[in-house]
Image (cartoon, rainbow, N blue to C red; front, top):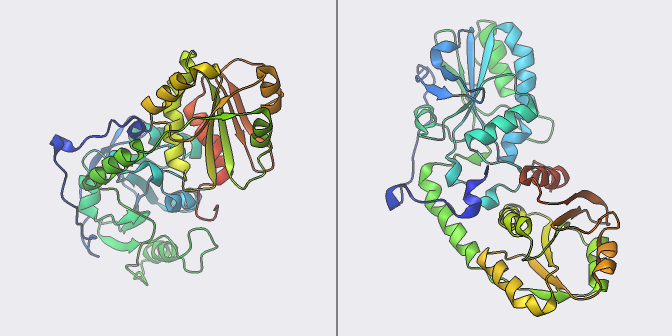
Length: 368
């Protein structure tokens, strides 16, 4: 499972909360700290592997909306400056188990290495993408404050610029700080501004695991309700006259694939709940089995909007989704206005569902 924290498997290292991490950004003129890190291509990379005239190290990550806003700009920088003897290396500094689920509201994957492989493939990154989340030693040595945070080194691998890429994450930038530094060094001129402030998502140090564990405990304690629903209300759900993206999952306790995918729905609800998003489940258990269905939902912590249908099932299926043949589980994603943007009968692929959700809600702060 990509987002492992969803199942509540996160634990404190040795059962003891780690102290907060404090790091200082590498000073201008300092030599590049050595590293050996695994990449998404299965290879290990070290500092000496990069022999270009200039070396640009970018600390970035999967989940951060700001980092995602800069993905294409980094690709464009590579295309423009690689022919000019500049190497770009991306490093993810985050401990994936220190990221709260509700911090993943703009992404479809987490910050672990396997998720990085997915993101690198999806984005077709032309540069190495390395994982530092296991020890975070490299992020601490460089002083990564946020994602993204860039460090530009000259031919002697001395730091000549650190800070932001430019001054706007979603709007057209007005100050091209990194480009200015690159062009100056390539022209053998002094960098006009050697250090700038960074903005983005704070580095997720291992010390934040305790906070993530507490968030799981809080969500696990949320009340789980199961109310009956009639045909008219089912039609209203399908129509979706509200402003929220609505995920509707039809299930039953007697259906093993149904109960197997419920924990994934819990994860998604916790990920996207701060955005215009709503998770709805509809049980097809017999009304006299309502308590059984309720008990299963409570067991799996399904604190979403939960219904048990009471009425003619054929009519219900037609009202909810005319293209649905009847087997369960059945999952719909309905945009405001009633347009179905995703449907699947049978146990779903969680990544596919999350991609559909983020594809509608958007991945950056411009997509609110």
